[in-house]
Length: 111
Image (cartoon, rainbow, N blue to C red; front, side):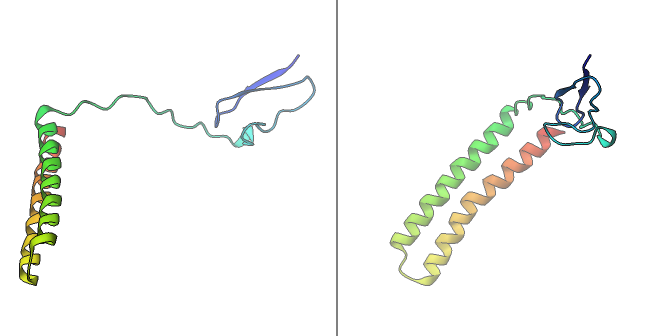
C-alpha cells in the first residue's frame, strides 16, 4: 500500500511506497511537518472602468500626443532659450493636466 500526501506549498500529490517515509515533497523540497498552506488567490476579473474614467484616460492620451507635438515644434522653431523654455512648459502642461484629471476621475470612480 502506498502513502499519498498533498504538498501544502506546491499542491502536488506525492506517493511513497509502503515502509518508506515521505518527509519532504520531491517537487519543491518543503518538509511536510513544517509546511504552511499558501493562501489561495481568487481569479476575479477586474471591473470594467466607467465611461467617464475611459474618457479621462482618452483625454490624457490626446494630451500626451499634443505635448509630444509641442516638443517637436518647439525644438524645430524656437530661436531663443526663453522660447524653448516656454514651449517645453506648454508641452508639459498639455501632457500633465489631462493626466491629473484622468487620475482624479479614476479615483472618484473607484469609490
